[in-house]
Length: 97
Image (cartoon, rainbow, N blue to C red; front, top):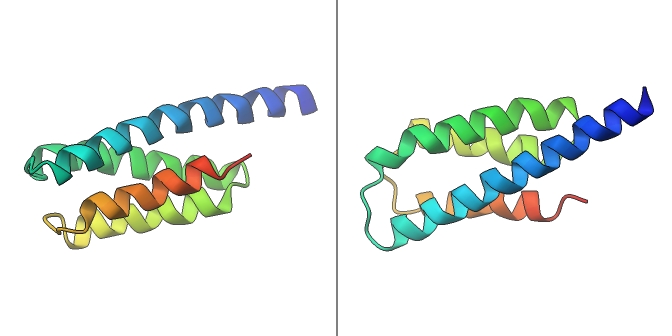
């Protein structure tokens, strides 16, 4: 059982890394002036998925940051702070062992 759980956690880490890279690209696009509207669906998908899955595997910081980003996108989707909000989650993913 421990081997299977370790394998699942590793798959989560791998996926979280890919999601982090996608969020970093989105943040860079936002800073270059790309409109947020076309990017919101991807931000919501990533943040929603990470929020639940990270919590299941015990990655509380990622789960909390992802939930915060999901709420932020819903509350203020056109905010000038959206790029920074994405990077908060990117940082949490980067700090995860």
